[in-house]
Amino acid sequence: MNLLEYEAKKILRASDISVPHSTLLGKGNSLQNVSLPSVIKSQVPIGGRGKLGGVKIVKTVDELERVSDSLLAHEIKGFLPKTLLAEEVLDIDKEFYLSLMINRSQRYIELAAHIDGGVDIESHGSKEFFRTQVTPNSFDAAGESLAELYGLPEKTFVLQDLVDKLYRCFVSNDATLLEINPLILTTQGELIAGDCKMILDDAAAFRHPEWNFEEKPASSNFVSLDKRGTVATIANGAGLAMATVDAVTSTGHSPANFLDIGGNATTEQVVASFKKIMEFPAVDAIVINIFGGIVRCDTVAQAIIEAKSQLPNLPRLIIRLSGNRSDEAATLLKEHNLPLYRNLTECIEALS
Image 1 (cartoon, rainbow, N blue to C red):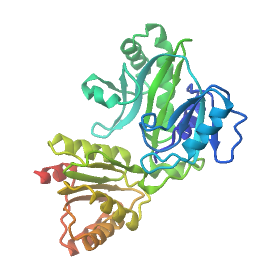
Image 2 (cartoon, rainbow, N blue to C red):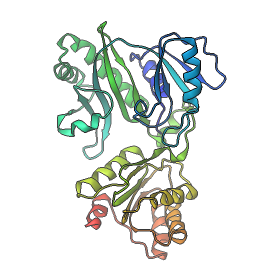
Image 3 (spheres, rainbow, N blue to C red):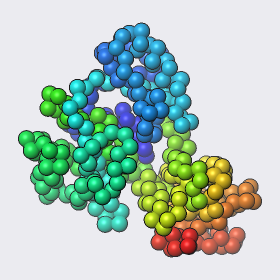
Image 4 (cartoon, rainbow, N blue to C red):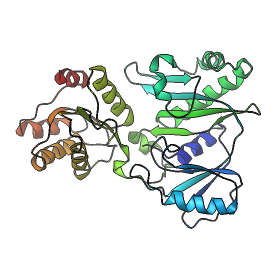
């Protein structure tokens, strides 16, 4: 479950983590509660909104009205916002990167940090990131490492406390990713979460009756990576989808897309994803990597079979379906002479 920025920040605020003062705006909402100047942010489920015209600074009431109307009508990569976030303008001294995520290969919660923050942080290369396992016994050490990395020795205790709060927020909300980018150091010496991306585990919804997030379209987790890419990917869950893309990249192949079908995908939605992949002219293989929890493997299998019948030129399919109703899925695929692979490693080997 990929949260919008304002949804993620609401969770941070409840965990006593500093975020900018803000007001939520939507069609028909009063603008009277917005303090000026403000940063107006389009609430769509993708990154890079600033570069795509989705973030504006306004200083007057006239600007606020004009910009709000414009942003609510401004489509960003196929997504039209239902809401806008109006935030205070911070006096920024420095920007950093900080995140917690599930390290699936090592089976622990990993803290990642970088001395730089903001857009295009991925371009700095993974070797420059500080990474460490984080547990309740390592908050002090992690905070000390962050203080050294960021060049803020006077903020050691503050950073130790921040790691503590982020970890507890991550665990208590069944998150798979909690990314603060940028983590802002203001000229007043405060550390504030300037932006936040948070992904929650759909399978944990039964533990969280309080979850009531803005509904997002199923297609919101399809991201085009390279129109000349030769391998397309389909997975469920952002972490698994990222791992699949990374695995394809590690072989020297060029991934065409990132696609997380989520936990409630229907046959129609999965078939629609195949059709979207067919828009990539160079794709000659599709890696399908599903670990069924909420999503049913037999639903995905049926979608694969349906896509094969509707799209005769579908490229080679490399399929891994494990978990919920995987035996039924295997039976369906066998009837249509579609082989299954046991894990992602076998899928990647099949690309060779």
